[in-house]
Amino acid sequence: MEANDLLPSSKLAEGVFQMKRMFRSFSALVSGVMLSAGAMGVSSVQAEDWSKFRGPGANGLPANLNQGLPVTWSDSENVVWKTELPGIGASSPVLFKGKIYLTAHDGYGLDKDNPGDMSKLTRKLLCIDAKSGTVEWIAEQSSLSEQEKFASFTLLHGYASGTPAVDASGIYVYYGTSGAAAYDFDGKQRWITECGKGTHVFGTSNSPVIYKNVVIVNASVECGDLIGLDSATGKEVWRAKGMDASWNTPIIVSTPSGDELVVSVKGKVLAFNPANGEKLWECKGIDDYICPSVFEYDNVLFACGGRKNTIVAIKPGGRGDVTKSNTIYRLDKGSNVSSPIVVNGRLYWFSESKGIAYCADAKTGEMIYEERVEPKPERFYASPVAADGNIFFVSRIDGTFVVPATDKFTISAVNKFESDSSIFNGSPIVDSGKIYLRSDKFLYCIGKAK
Image (cartoon, rainbow, N blue to C red; front, side, top):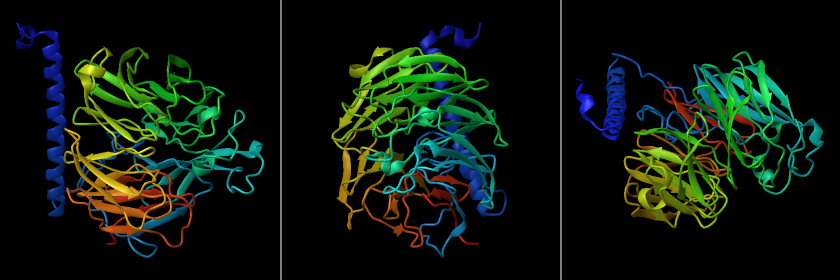
């Protein structure tokens, strides 16, 4: 008889889950040791691909927090390369095996006063070499159906707001009413699937999520459903309803009872089985439209959003309505667009429009600071990233604010490219001592000068 045979199944699952968490912690420790060894010339830092929205853990953190990133940069300082983009967009870059993938749109909606002919709207998927910034190929995708016109809130982010998702099977994009599509690594389109024809003055923004052989899209605007597509063929595998007023990307979290696909919708946070779309649980969320994506840190889910600005901390797992059993706390502070980030047990975020920086204890929700930023920045739509004890908050027009991850609010630097007056909506990514940051005009690789 095995020792595990003496344990109840729930205890066994919990034990296995904790062993996996311990292994991940050990791996992080080894990574840190390798970093120190690299500083002494023994080894080099191993990179982990930033192949989906908000990175390896979908929480804005690189696998290795010790990156050696520059704190300051400008047109003439710490820019490794700069690549002009053939279109604009609010999506974030992703990185997979030395290549950056990024979306943009062209042909319509480049000028708010003269948007042009919507029939010429084209989305572009770019493959860019991460070392040199060379554009290796561009895959164009025309619109399948009518889009929301370039007006109202669509002016703020355009028609390329969804970030690609990449794994060894290919590159996956979601363009709203123009559908979800899969591309090979040479830029050849493998399939395209329509996911609904609905439009909204807010436009669309959700990014695909890959789970094993299923590509999942939150088609809240287009049809109100969460859709699982076969990654090889694009055919529908499953569909779940209830994506009400949800402009955010789902995440995958591991629990003792199995993997969960978690998404925030109006009034609720929902969890599904990512393999078949079965609903697992729901928890009271935020009674408004939701833009920020849920993220997980240390086995706690953080849902944020709403015009009243709210954050809800939730324990994953459970079945049915877990509002009473799994809600850890609620805060009447938050952000309406960008997601927060957790560093060393502290929850940090900027209001998207109030010009206020916040820090709270991630376990209890106790506020650590709430400080007004002067002069007041215009807006923050990008979600932050963190490394080296610093958090990088990218504003739309006022530069990148570098804030130390401490209990006292300070700003170490505000970095702005004077030669680039375009909009910075995309969230940055971090890899191998570099920050990759996109504007409507350029993709920048930022790193310490050698």
